[in-house]
Length: 79
Image (tube, rainbow, N blue to C red):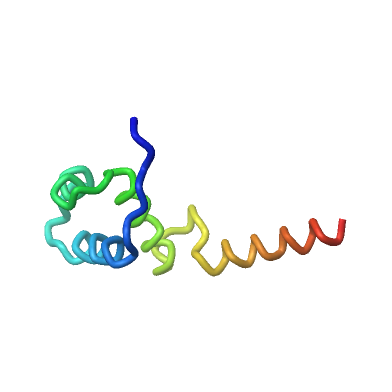
């Protein structure tokens, strides 16, 4: 399997918006195929958007992840 490529932020945001605004919801695999992106990448983008919106509690939002990283760096520095 080839290494995953980076997708532009605009594509990510647009793909998530298309998924979230669709009624009925398309399957992630089918939508990813139509957009030409990896279905696991699209699934992760959707899950992260849901976490950011407070709809999921099984993964941290971007702000929490950034704060955790900063705190880990401070702890490492103090040690």
